[in-house]
Length: 630
Image 1 (cartoon, rainbow, N blue to C red):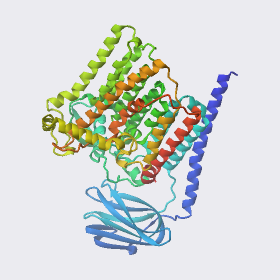
Image 2 (cartoon, rainbow, N blue to C red):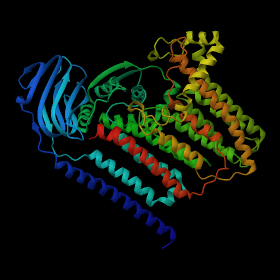
Image 3 (cartoon, rainbow, N blue to C red):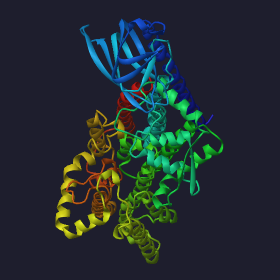
Image 4 (tube, helix red, strand yellow):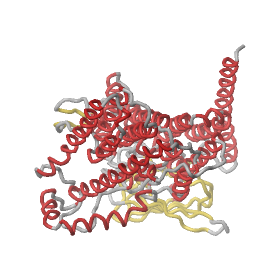
């Protein structure tokens, strides 16, 4: 038996250990939790009408029709309640305020308020309490009918919890058992982590949009291959008219999540809404990969929610592939790129409907390949790279053309990398021309006053805003730099950039995220560069810095034109996620081979990925598993 065959057998044994251990851990821990809960719980029971007191409500058999300032109080005499369940009907979505009397750590009764958002299409609410309760008070808006109050203590295993434990134990053991393999190739560690945690993230998300402008991206994905006239089914229309919101998501338990998924799938074939499709724009190329998967799912007749998840999975898969090859290709800062790619904000975008995956993924891959060419100045650039580098920058900038100037750093590649002078000038001229043409898709509508204003910004008008800028250029320069200065820390490496989780809010332990990225940037294992490589990399650093600064100016100017009210001095609409494509090139400016560490690469990778695993446990457990899947 050869050494190679032995290595393969050993690899399969390790994989089998990981799979069996992860599955066993999931079911064992769930069994222990079920046993602990069994001691507190009893059988489910309907609340007796004698225990119900109604204020401003009319009784109708076993139901109550609420009037203005309606309130229902239920006495449950200190019994343990796992879930409190009630039936309701309403013409529109509403929010109930539930006041629960529970014991504090000293055993004294105190009131706790729970906001319970209710969707008019579900008719049942399940509220997680998991405590002894003295009384429950429900405040409801006028016109809501409620009843069938039930203390739900039924024994019920949680599949989401089992999956959560299996994934985290599996990832943890994989990094331990495949320590050497991951140590040699950090991109493999990224791929394993991003795919497993990413798919778990998609499974835990509520059946509602939670990322930035996700309902708009959903709209463009689902009508991508449709003709001029688009017919939506009821499920698609319902998802669209209930967009992402900063308010609490309406699904506060796994039962409510299941009800909404059931509603989606039951209304897949029902007619919902029709409209005339808008004209195609270059930015919509960012939806192509998701649209292909969604169209295939619809073609074979899959239920809506399955198609909906497949669209998200397609976005995640593309992100993982692009970042895998970016990490594999870049000769330096591999760990930094892997750490950045696994942080909350980019992973939220990767698991949502968003064209930012195309923007971030293709630009990062293009930048990684470009850095490799600068790093090896004596090596001729291949024909494949002559095509791939400009293509990745071009396609990555289609969603937002203002990022295309980053490709201009390629014109600073030394002439000796090319076959001859003619090839060098043709290629660099093509890059400049490509940059100009794509920028025209942004500049021409702006100059011609046909660029659309965003009404969400208020009294916006691109034409009038341009007149203000041209009439007061020095004032605008001051406004621009003041806004950039005031937000630079939080948007570059702070809470508003890679630590935000969109409408789920800022990751509480954002300092861990910032410390990890900066720590990796300063301490990761480095290669010693020779004199020629140093000179070439210095050219890259000198060229990329003003280009990144120029893109930053374009980002703020675009939002000033389209999203900010005319004449305002505070620019609205700019978000930290717009800085993500700039993080790698800007951090590369400070890269040096003068810092040396004594870490073994395999140990370094293990520690880095364990910290990332901790970050994602802290992010998913309290924000997704507990509120939406318990």
